[in-house]
Image (cartoon, rainbow, N blue to C red; front, side):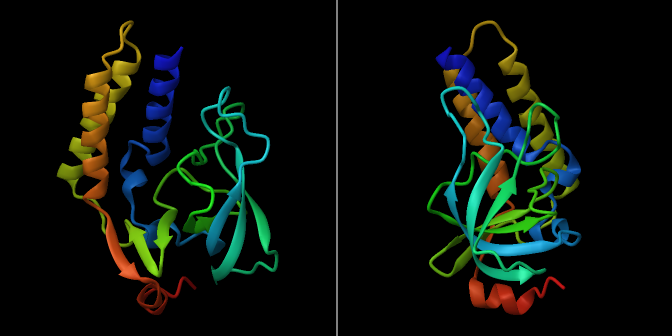
Length: 192
């Protein structure tokens, strides 16, 4: 059972990033059609039981600043993936309670395809802000993703192999990451 949960978390985490070309689009390009971009703090996952579920369907966030759109509420509910309707929204388990993020939302929903979130910590924004993946990157990323999915369906699970593939997946994802200070981020991107 423990192995099943480990594999499910790993595969769902990869699924949250997606495996097609649209999933690696930069934050600036992915959020062009989002109607709300906010700097926020993750407060809670209401009605989420991590012993029974892999991915929370919603999270409560404290809105610290609105970068695009209109919102007057201090706390909002962000909707994520709902397995009962397969709604193509992001899995929310990657967002840690108490941490800060910049989120691009479409009607308070966090879309899975594309990069609709960036990390924020002590005035620094980190993530795939503007980098667009090359064709070679996407092929390698897809190959790693396919190998991880294939491992999930084996009868015996090789934890070392899964861990190695997970590290390879993370290294590929990190190739697109950038950092910049928040003030420069706001001055460079107007999101209007």
